[in-house]
Image 1 (cartoon, rainbow, N blue to C red):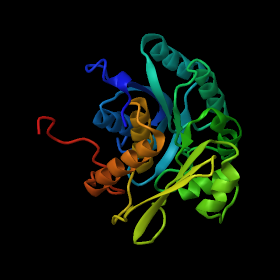
Image 2: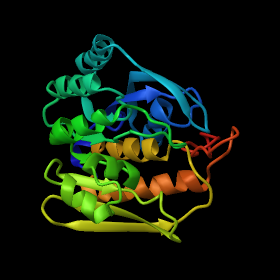
Image 3: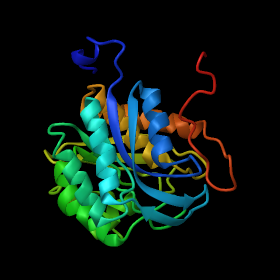
Image 4: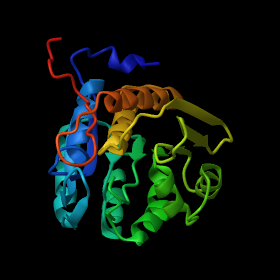
Length: 271
């Protein structure tokens, strides 16, 4: 359900502030955010948190940007545009967690989608383990929803072999809504589980697609932020984001030697 506020200004696209890393392969990170948000009819305001050296196979190095630079980027956007939602991707350091908290203090009531990027698709680390702890202990409190895959949920919950249910039980005291995605399993169907602190649960299933994908988590989280920015109710927004992400994976392409890259935009805008 879309709120009436978006109907009053038909030429206005809601602004989503994206605080994420840059992926030079274009599969994940800020480029994924921008493409997915364009597809939702939103305007992406990309704030770079980190630079990475990676391709579609794996990440080999990264550098977290200076805190003042990140704050300056975000403040410039906030002063100029009405931010309707915030999407977090790679933070890479505890210092960047503090930076996000400072940014969110300037955006009271704005929904925040936290994609806890702790590992690249190829398995490489994108931050020290204490980043996950800082996210759980401090960042989740100001987040509307977090969208970890099961390996990330296990890191956040400190349960190396935990099930999705066990991880959710450990994490829900810290966050109101938790979407644990099931793409890393091997079942014929993917089970994506939404847990809510009020006790409600929703399971969304879809057919498992062959292959592995670079940027699927970024695509999902930014799409969800876009749907919330448009005024869609949370459970409906989660379903919309999951459905869109599945379609981008179904139509994914393999531009390099590694994982497939989601096709988030049509090739012909006039089609």
